[in-house]
Image (cartoon, rainbow, N blue to C red; front, side, top):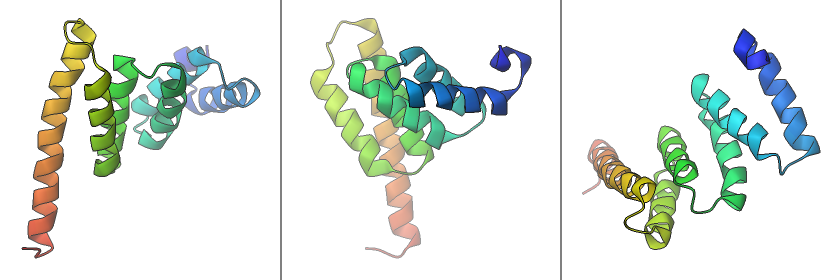
Length: 125
């Protein structure tokens, strides 16, 4: 109800209280992921996605969100590791997995381009 009424701070506080009492509450973690994306709080979404990853390691939504958050936070090495792990576990032919694998190819290109630009701007050979 707090989310629907626009009380994002109240919703955040209440959801964090729920997961503190019951860390296995997937619904609360999912709502926190959405709240983090809605408020541009990549750290909140990342925290929630890391919790969901424990119970949903092959969930395409979770993996996709993790990579997105890590890229937003410029944690490129971690993003690459998540991409590698999902590539190893993905089942070709499952539409959600195929979609995420395609997203990951674009994400890797973005990461490599960013790292190359950083190297060039820092004067590294």
